[in-house]
Length: 82
Image (cartoon, rainbow, N blue to C red; front, side, top):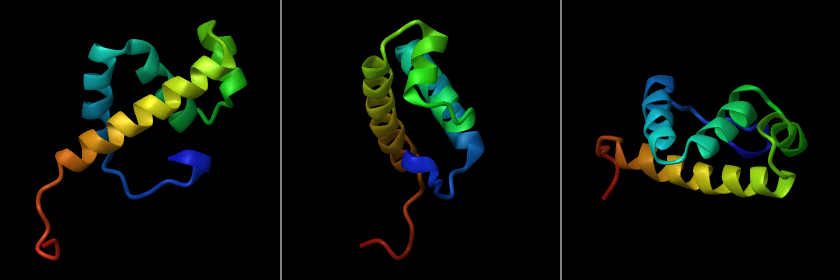
């Protein structure tokens, strides 16, 4: 997700994971929405949410890792994995 490079992500799975994250940390979920879908910079996110740019970046990093783990955990096992 970083640097605007997007991988093949099932948007339904991402939506479910974002909803789950929103229940745990609404601010982090909002940071992801603004960054991933809105394309905002950390400075723009900070201004929108009334937080510092460093807080926006920390939220992005934490949320991104949480989402990657959550999405990978939800994937069915593939035949080519050993």
